[in-house]
Length: 148
Figure 1: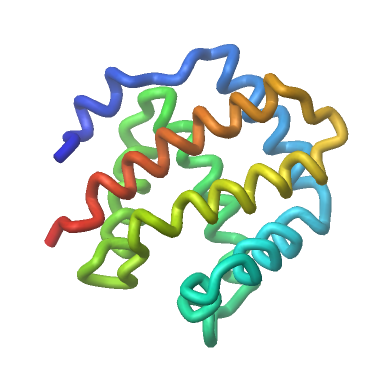
Figure 2 (figure 1 turned 180 degrees about the vertical axis):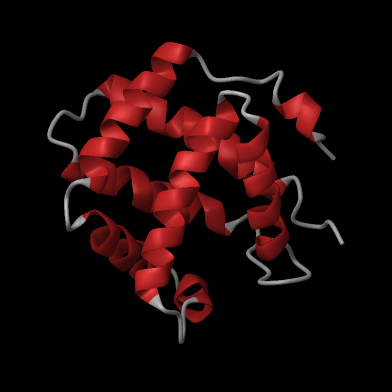
């Protein structure tokens, strides 16, 4: 199991964080960003669709927006953001919402294709920045999936 202090040693570069942050701002300014992402993600996989039955999608949008910011901050070594992610990991763990690690690949594919469609300044560097920052968050969550 990865400890918080080990995660801070695996920081993402400042340049990559800036690229990610600029793209995230552009995406979040677009009203279709969250609805398009969730539409793709839920339509992609039956298991994903089942996880969202009865969900308040407006609340989901807000939580994901906050989580994207927190992943960015955690990947730069911010302790408070890592504590936020630890709580998200707890709620996504097998013992609570049971979001298996296998679903994160679908989540990432849906997110990256949405960023590509929404961000008017999307480039290969933007794609790499998103993939790198999100990989940090995914590894953080999946490392805690089996935790009690």
